[in-house]
Length: 182
Image (cartoon, rainbow, N blue to C red; front, side):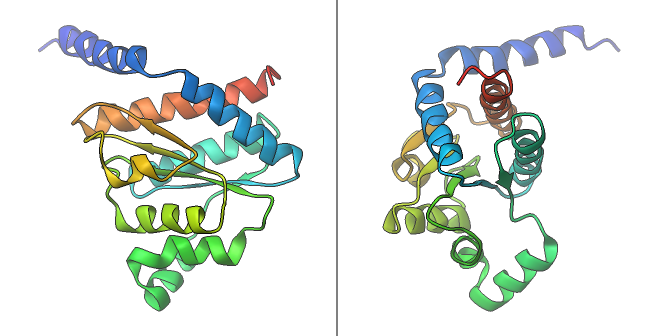
């Protein structure tokens, strides 16, 4: 069986999503990240599941390739400790309280935009005036789309299309810094 058509259609679907994406949000995100970098802060990136893996990849690239200090909360000891002590819905907010300072910022990723731990963390960032970029998908009115300084939404019902689009958006931002376009 040959899957060339499937692959070409798959590729085109992701291209079409990114082609419709509001690139002004890239400019706004770069500005927030650059302000954080200039203050000597860190970019913390958090997601669940595949978005957590993406957060790790992008965080390493920010630090190594772009020289923008970045970290994640992807330590299983931290996650299980904070989830046990504060509940799964609150572990990210509690990690933000424990690890960040006034110079830092957050990038929160939730494909659905409804993950309680991510939405609660975004609300915490709002309450504490922590600069925040969100990435989500599925419904355009999901809770996460209202909580960031910049809210990037990918209009799709497919987890893989959303996650791949988020990944491309984030590594493009990394490359803007890596290529010293800022």
